[in-house]
Length: 257
Ligand code: CAA
Figure 1 (spheres, protein in one colour):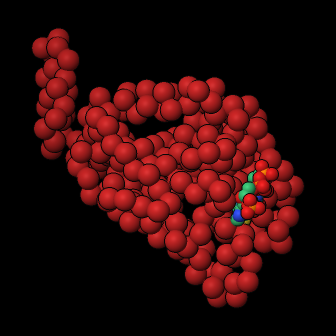
Figure 2 (cartoon, rainbow, N blue to C red):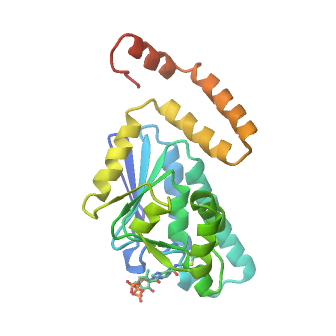
């Protein structure tokens, strides 16, 4: 499928979705969000894709929601716009396939927010993160007030959101906002290497693990353990459990389909 503001490529089970509106630093406007919604649906439905990497074209990952488009919105329109992006980001978060954000540059406002909907973030040394919204007279609107504290803790999230400051990749690593930092040249190789490590495992098990972590994290530990127990049980109804354990016993590499 071809898009105006996205580039989607697939190679050996790994899809790379590049946000491609570099003149506006990949700012998220309604047209881009609508294409993103289509692309996410296509990726979800594509059985060849095991892992998705999201990155940005040019010097930004995503420099936020499009301020020019947002400027004259009414309160109701702003709510609808937030709901549109939130829905797509939630779909990325709950997608069965693991999603890696390869953060190549500015990840501000909505850009930081989309990266936080991904399972894993790898940052270029050039990346900058922040939630600058209060400097624009608004709050984060694509779930930044919700995901940032869950990822870095309430105190750090409040500091970042109240001050509107930008942090570099090293600080993002230090506070646990990103999993790893790479040179700009090595960023996509690192993201691909991690995607390949994931792709060689049992995909049903990886997907079940994602569900258990996400659903468990959003509830109390007792309920989370029940979710894990059910999912653990479900694994044993799956061919990949048979293959994985038989391969171990037979001292050979598992051959997951
Ligand atoms: N919306 C619309 N256009 C944007 C944009 C955004 N979020 N970010 C950058 N652009 C545009 C600029 O207006 C500029 O366009 P022109 O060439 O037509 O003037 C172009 O992208 C290049 O940007 P700059 O010239 O500003 O580039 P720079 O290197 O000097 O600065 C920057 C880079 C520090 C990221 C700066 O562009 C910036 O501060 N951008 C806005 C970041 C921001 O505030 N993001 C939060 C948006 S609100 C939000 O996301 C709310 C939410 O949670 C939903």
